[in-house]
Length: 130
Image (cartoon, rainbow, N blue to C red; front, side):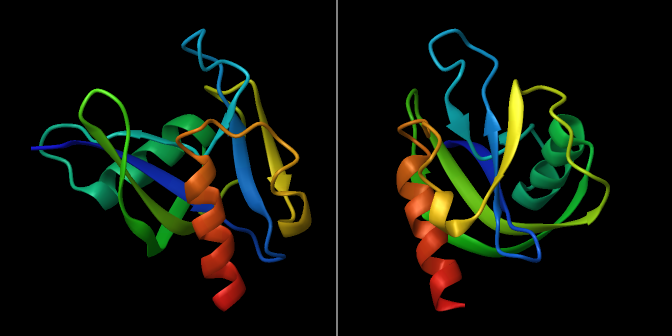
């Protein structure tokens, strides 16, 4: 059974994507990712996604369409990502170094972590279709 990590591709009303800069571990610090985290035992993916966004960003999100399927990570983990929108609160970098709202034409202005880069491309594709 795969160990699951969930991620939120949070998009605002003007079509910008929220990017979060990792603070740790040292080998990933400074790289940019989609917010999210591990699914706890007994938790479903959506519950974990909502909890992680509350813990990391201080916002309540609503999950929409899933982006792709299971994205393989290291150590037997898979990443599952959903498009999401903030329904309450303003995002704050509680566990990250920084947050940035990236317009579609600036999506690649940050150094995405290698695991997140193909997902960002898939998010862009989904938004272009929508």
